Image 1 (tube, rainbow, N blue to C red):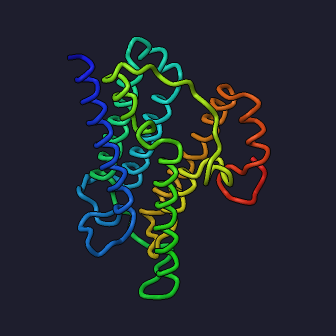
Image 2 (spheres, helix red, strand yellow):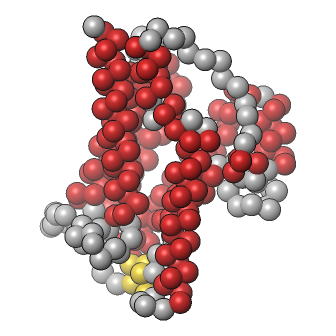
Length: 244
């Protein structure tokens, strides 16, 4: 019975993560068919919007950073199965995104606006390309493993956790972190960059860069010289730039 509950929990975590991340892709872009998006908030908190938005970003960053660290996974959650840890992380991350969607407050004004012009089409194409790269890159490294579904399936079928191996395929031959690179492109490429959107993009960019710093330290510990050599030959986020 326990293994079925864990697998069900993993499915719920996966579906919530997939749903909230998919909504993010649409939420940050001014689609005509989207009644709710970053510049059209769901709620009016009645407080300083800058304080609210920065607080939401900090809460998001803290949740992701703390739950990804070894002291949390191997300390507080040391007696919990890997599948439950992964599903819990997915659910907590989804909750943070839901809080952002609901409580995010508008900052009036725009940095740039391109309407019905060649530039608007270019930025829209770049936006779609960025998110497509990020999504496709999750399958290159095992999409279902990344979001905790495979861990739950292994519990269901009594399959032991596989040995971690270092592989470089497809996008990963050109940049070390295509998921994060595609996400940043998707956040910044918009034909109408409001101050609201700018704040989100800056906050997420800072979070991604700090997160990658700690992730790479962890990858060096896990894979040693193999990853160290990979860092020397492959740029972090921007192709053709060899420096870390």
